[in-house]
Image (tube, rainbow over all chains, first blue to last red):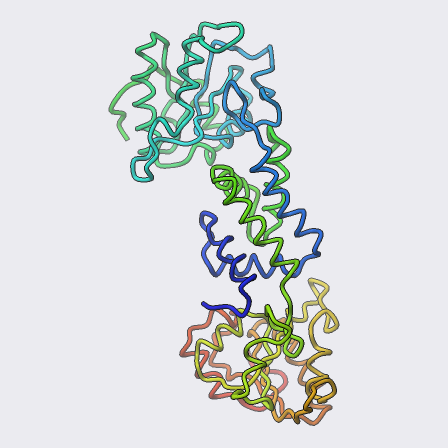
Length: 211
Length: 211
């Protein structure tokens, strides 16, 4: 598909880099943007650039935050000794929506995926080990329990297997969500009841989970 | 869904304004952009802004173009007396891919849709009438035939009905694509053979087409 405008072609190429957006859809999006008011498109473009340039990550739990420390990590009513490890911010939102969890989080920023070349060092695993170790916190806390709240996918299981091994070495209790979750799905697509149930039913980490 | 970052929230809100993109998909796109290199996201954002700010429309046929006059309108080997009226640039690409058409185009920039509040004056109909009238061209040409190559949707039919009436008043021959196209679909999704066949089989405009 060669277009009559390189400006349009460049925009379509860029939109087609988004996950799940092919060239045909990218063209539809570009034409929609072209029909809009110039200021509206400037706001659109600016919102994306600013998000990437200015967004910060909580210095404790690595969640996306506008402050150095996120609202959950600043909340004194939440149990510091209980850490729930999740893949990304969508999982934090999903768990918060169940209103069943009063501990803190740790956001990995992904899962281990050898296929995509993502190893443990590409995730926020070092910061998690430091929290468990109590090394960097201003008031060191003994972490009592780490809940591995990862998706029930191959990558989620691989990441859980790795983290359980590393965390057990530190003598911390490691638990996992009850397999009430439908297997093969992403965490953030589970319904609230199922996800809430699986937080209540969490159990000691076991290797070689039946799928 | 309330997020821990207003920067992220603003970007998700903006992405969710795109057609066919809900908030859940918008969040996935935003997180994908967040994981990318800062310069890469700047290029992404800039490509969209520049497209909207700098893209031009061909002064003859209203197609998207980087020059004042598009490549098709500049091509002396294409029949100036034959104009194919289409909804948008995707339809130009689809028809060019059939390699069956050697006339010019006129891009309406949409179709008449009372549901969306789009009337004839929101489209490039005035420019079409001027071309048929020979009013603005430096070398006025007598247009011999106007082909209405619109999608076989309710909006496409409405637009065709309107344009046929206006053009017939000017004494120009108005034709339509053969209804070999599958009814209810968009023009740009038709396969090349069907679309090519329907250009060869075009026939005088008739009202009250059987669907």
